[in-house]
Amino acid sequence: MKATRQDRSKATNHAKPHYLICSCLLFFFAFALGMVSNPYLQSHRELCKPCETSLNFSLPAPEPVSLMHDMSEEELLWRASFAPKIGHVLSSRVPKIAFLFLTRGDLPLAPFWEEFFKGHDGLYSIYMHPDPAYSGLVPRNSVFFGRRIPSKPVRWGQINVIEAERRLIANALLDSSNERFVLLSESCIPLYNFSMIYTYLVNSDVSYVGSFHDTTPGCLGRYNPAMAPQITAEQWHKASQWVEINRALAVEIVSDEKYLSLFQKFCLISWKPPCFSDEHYIPTFMAA
Image (cartoon, rainbow, N blue to C red):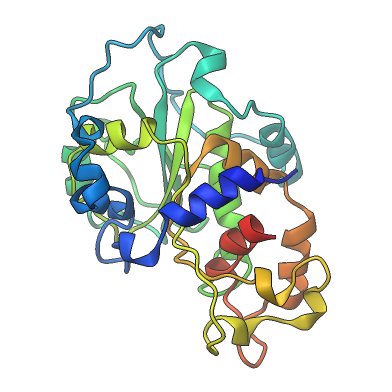
């Protein structure tokens, strides 16, 4: 199951690195909104009007009290892989943006996010993937209360980072109203208000991945020829792991077994030169 050539082409063309603002200090998906200064968007200001929710959809279903469940990893991915690729059209609900936080524990910038989400209930979903050993308490009146999903240990640069991202995406896909999926770290903050971000993303039909290919040691230098012929050197791409994707691509990512298995075997931090799978998996998957 792969993205169409047209969808992949659109995503690549719209996701140049200079559209991205994320170094885990700023909110990465200002990549999309940072483009408001782009001449194209200057002539299309209607995309950035304040969010209007008077759409022809029924009211969104209430968020579950808890996202915890007893599904195995295999069952979760299996269920998510059968999720409809078009969410709000099939469910006749208001489309939502899923904010997927990959964290170690507490969210130090939670006050910023609380203010960001205020007054926009029903237009977003939150999913938290902390370390399993994390035992911090979240206030009941917080937007983050009950938003933790079953998690597994994650270590910097290792393949389990990709597995955690797929876990977040899979949980979010179970809600058919989630139309856009934003991967975030605990160090990200929004640079624009919710209305602008929501309107821009919900009206977009492409994904935002800052994918590029070059022959430097930090990109092609990490490619392992053992990945061929499934992944060629020309298809090997790099991007920030903090991406924004549409529902169709999200379904394809959680359904993938072919390319993930190659990364599990041939893209390891322990190799020389080290290979950081989180920087290569999604952009290479889209290019392959």
